[in-house]
Length: 290
Image (cartoon, rainbow, N blue to C red):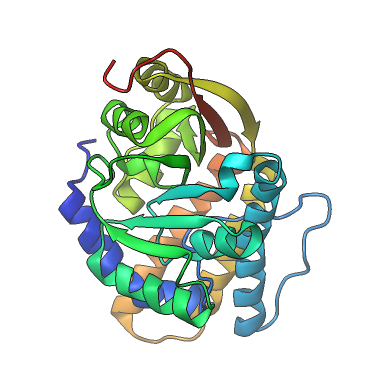
């Protein structure tokens, strides 16, 4: 599948702003990434739309709480952090609130930068969260970042170009936390690519690009089991929406979304894709221009 252009992706996410706020709002901490539901103690099926929204957001926050346990032991995460593909700024606000992090919230959607700034103001974190509108392959900064994060955004990027840019921006010893889906079965990955206009890659592809740019893989953690629970909640949200509309076009859209979400849940549950957290470290002795 050809990779969607950055302009096409920006337009896609600009059009998604209102649906994102409806499903995951009202903010100020709004996420647009999947979440994590404890497979040993999943919540009861929410019975109302508000309860569904609360459960979805709680799952997204649970994912960040899992990451926060790792971030708490990484002093780089308390410094200057680049949030690649920040969405509406939920993770940036989480970091700033939890660790006092100074976050450059990177987006290629100009309208989202205004939303991030507004939410940061509402949260009292304007001095710590700064939206930046730019292509992740060419960030308008000289460097000096202590760490970078990319939660379900690297699938839109050309991996070798992106890691080379991160090498320019991150100092020796700096860390990258990357959460995304990785190809295990190409058929399963194609559902994600079509629905989200992205292009999933294999973990080996990422590792090769990282090593070439001067990074080493430090840790890798599977999140599939907890992630599958999020897609089950999201399917419940779609079923609820289908029960609320009689508009043929909206019914058609929701049915297409439901078919995609069924495939996402199956891919997570059966490991057709690997939903994983990778932690990379900027290696010593490798120049950013190598």
